[in-house]
Image: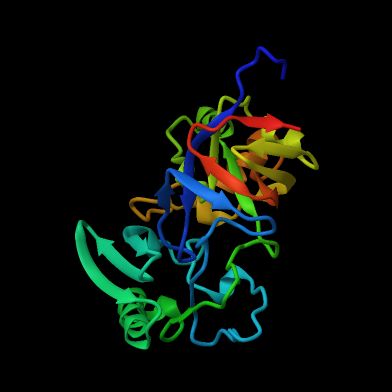
Length: 257
């Protein structure tokens, strides 16, 4: 990148307060060193047999929770989360179907009862809404920010010959103005965005969760298989670790350090 080259910039910011549920769009967010986005993957819906100790939280693989890779019905729902009150609303087809304050036993029970009825046998027993202070239910063991290059998604669209909704990749930071796949050249480097700095740690291997249409819930693509056939890998996007906290907003340029 030369001084005259326009910087790639943030086109979209998202977090996912409940693992496996819909994205919450953001205009701006304040990052902290060593952390993911605030409220991102704060909660998860664990299967009845999942052992999670909130007093001593440990990372668990995603198969221990409701998730799109196995439970595509989740894509039929839209979630709305108010961090100030910890209130989660679940909507389907434009109608609110459940509402509960996740900081209260009654509110959690309302949400758990809804998902037990909605998921039926897929839930492997009544789901448990779980959280722990400072814990993040990420697919990665580390607390990371996922970065998606929209040009890479567009190149995948070229291969499949149809639109690919970038939200399939459940990213936090969606970048425009960067050549396709150039994000892989950032590995091991730091980037500056807004007043924050992040170190790009590794590529994100894709699983069959990306096969699910995020609106209809239909398993209508074979994204990992297509990536492997067309590009020789099943990766799309990168994980980055926040090394210096700061405010980040849509429109911020991204500078490679």
